[in-house]
Structures are given as structure tokens and as C-alpha cells.
Length: 425
Length: 194
Image (cartoon, rainbow over all chains, first blue to last red; front, side):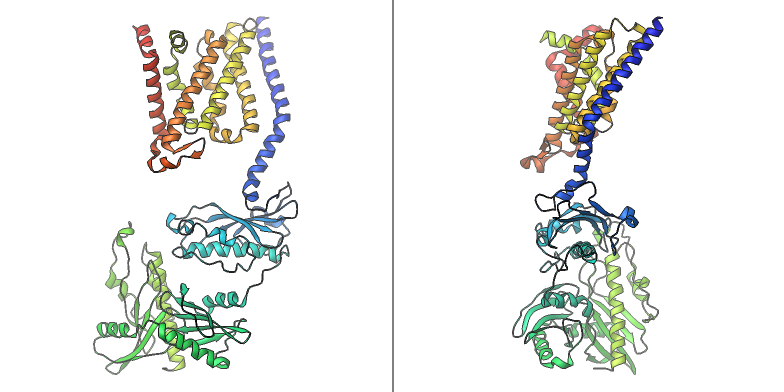
């Protein structure tokens, strides 16, 4: 009897508390649900205009369930797209990852209904601390606010080129989704912006551009920081053009459609060449001295003009006995600015390769056990444009230097090909 | 003071063994410390009151399971309320909020303690004071912040170790040692042992 009474009491305790929890859940359940929804939407609201709200059906795209969404042409960098409840715009979560990232950045972008960025923030940054562009330019994110998809005047952070470029590309891709699905209008780029954005395509060797002196028909002047040439935005009447002049003084003119129009605008080309000539740093003398050291008996060293706009800043032809060789000084950027000297024989095979310095700040590379430089250089001898795959340029634990070497050698072969095809200039 | 010492008899040593885990998780942020302290105070107070009411109905052999049910029930109810109104604190406490029920049962060892509402009040308040003291030290000196707000002039001088587990145990041990010294509790315990 006593046992039964005890059991009943214990069961009653259970029943009372179960009932209390059930009742309390009816009251607190909706509050908890609202809290959870708020936690999800808090980062989105932070980038949206004032008065924005997100309802239960705000999510219109999720990378986890892409097939269920009606949105098309969504790149892999876009994680989710939310539609604001009052027609104020959209919020997009995306990721950005640069070539040397160890982990992607998570970004939230707010785009108002008129197609302008209302807010942008980095939710998490898990990459190498030294690559964080916010430390170098705390106001960088604010340069995006108020811009449409053209992102006019939004530049790259000096010293964090890779990560800030990846960030800008992610923003462009995110806005591209809204444009492709006709949710916002595409921003109109100015001729200046279109021509400036053409530079990486027509002059890939201009690794980083800095402002230079503008004059005459030149409305905007830019110098490649690795001294491989100049880029000018020029006007002729109402039309705008891009002039690129490489380090050997060769100039090409492009219009806003990207078409080359040098022959039709020779006056502009001459003006651009003259402007570049006065400011261009010469590398022929340094290359000549280097060739004399690298190749015993080098004679008749003659500077060449190049038709390429890559990282090659100087080119010479010379003879050793009766054999003809071509020497190139490529200025690609690895961990720091590099000067790489490539000597190619008349058959297109590398005869010799050297650099001012392969590995910088050796104490930085904790795992760097030392490099067998002679063996590394010898590994390039005999390679041609067909047999060079880039793998031969790899240096363990030195990814940036490896990529710079790969680029330099590839550019030397490209410049050699342009000489051989076009004849010596 | 003597009355307080009498009430606190045995608590510091027991708290070191049973409550140390909670101090680790909740003692590095003042908000979490107050949240945990309030949860412990309410749960032991309410469970003691209910057990006192049910004392004559429940036989001696069923008192422990009954107490376990009651305190677990109250901890669950308090957790639900905190989840609704203090979600940030619940996120900080994590699973330790639920685990508190078991520790409180172990901590309240004797029947007298279980039934005594006054004892429950003192236990809860003492626990909260310890938590708050540890949190003030750990958050202030370890994270250079108070209540989640950074203290600018301390940013360059913060001792990060204090915010971690080792620092937490260190701070708890020092705080309890100080309390023992001030209240003379250690002398009372030594006298009893002898």
C-alpha cells in the first residue's frame, strides 16, 4: 500500500511538471521561434535599409537546395539569397576565396530595390591574418555602399591585392545573380571604367597599377608597378580609348568594345608612346650585363621591341659564336617583386635561367629546408614552350614564388614566339 | 558573521568539487555567471519548498528520486524561460544548464539540506556570489571586458589564460581560499575534523 502510494506521488510529480512544461511551452514556444528567426535574420537586417523585415518565406535560394529555387545562373560563391518582405531589396550571403586563401570569407550583402548596395559586411574571416584587407584599409567596405553593379571607383586594397580582388569579384557575382534573374537593373559603367577593366585582358603583365601623370589627351594615366608598361585612358573628340604601352615602347590602342584600333589612331599611339618613354624605367642595360655574366662570349647584344604585354620588361638578341640566343628579363611578382632572366636559343629551348633572388625572407618559411638553387635552375635547361608545364617551376612551401616563376617562364616563351613569328623588330 | 559562517559550513569544499565545472563554463562572462547563479538559486529554492511540502507524503526511501524529479522539473522550466527571455545566456551555458540538476542533487547531501528553504537560499546565493566574483576577475582581467563590453585601457594588458580553463580553476581556488580566510570557514572545518 505504502509502495503504491509512493508510486502515485512520484507519478503525480511527473504529471504536474509535464503539464507545467507543456503549458509553459505554449507561451515560450513562439518567443523562442521568434528569437531563432531573429538570429538568422540579424546579419541580413544589418545590411538592409532601415525598416526592412524578413518573413518566413524570405529565403528564395539556398545552395544546399538549389534545385528548389527558381533562380538561374547562380555561381558557386553565392550561398543564399533572401527577399525582403516590404519590397526594399535583397540580402545575399556569399563566400570569397583568393588564390592563396586558407579558408573562404563569408560575406553578407544588402542590395536595395534600386540596385544599389545598402550594406556589406564580412561575417567571418578565417584566412591568414596578414591577408585581411580590413586591417590595411578599415574604410574599404564603406566604398561599396551606395554603388550599383558597376562598382565604379571601387578599387583594390594595396598590400592585400589577392583577398580584396576576391572580395570584389564575390560582390560582382552576387549582384550578377540579381541582374540575371531580373530582380535589379544592371548598373551602367562609364567609358573610363570599361576601358580600365580592359587592362588585365589586354595587358596581363601589368600586375598592379598605380597612378601616373596625365597630360594632353590622356585623362587617366596608370603605371604598372612592376615597370612592364603604362596604361592610358585617352579621349579623341567624344570617344574614349585605352592605350597600353609596354616597356619596350610598343603601343596598342583599344576602343570601349575591346577592339584593337591602333592603325586608325596613330596620333594617339604616338602621344602615348612619348608619355611612356619619358617615364619608363629601362631594364635593357641590366639585362645586357646579366647576359654577359650568364653566357660567356655573348656578343652583338641588341635590344628588341616586343609585341607582348606580359611581365617581360626587356628583351635582347645576342650571339655566342654563330649561335643566336634571345634573353628576357621578366618581372613577375611572387612574395616580392622578382627579376627573372631567361635565355632561349634559336630553337626555342631554354639555354639558361637565373633570378636576382628566388626565396625572400627565408626565416618566414618555417618548413623551408633550403633550396638547391643550381639544381632548380638546371631543371629549366632544355625546356621549350611545348614541354614547359609549370610543374618544373614549383618550389616546395613557396607557392607565390613558384607561381611567379611559372608566369615569368611562360611569358618569356610567349615573347620569344612573338619575336620569331613577327621577325626581329 | 558567525551565523553566516555556520550556514556556509562545508560549502566551499563541496562547491570546489561539484560547482567547478559550472564556474569554468559560466565564470568567464558576467552575464553567464548571473544567469547560472539565478538559475541555481531559483531551482534549489523552489525544489526545497516543494520537497518541504511533500515531506510527510513521501517515505524516506523515495525522497532521493522525488527530489531528483522535482529539481529536474524546475531546472527544465527555468531553462525554457531562459531560452525565451535570455537566449544569449543560454547559448553561453550550453549543456551545463541542464546538467546543473544532477549536480544540485549531489550537492544537497543531507535530508536537512533538501528540506531547508533557508539552506537553499544560502546555497544559491553563495553559489551566485562565487560565480559573479570569478566572472568579474576572469572577464575583466582575462578578456578586458565587462558584460561583453570591451574595456579599452585594459586591452593591451589582458591575461588571456584567465579566460581559459586553467585560469578559471586558478581564480576559483583563489576566491574560495579568500572566502575561507575572511569567514574563518577553514578553521571551523579543521576544528570539526579534529
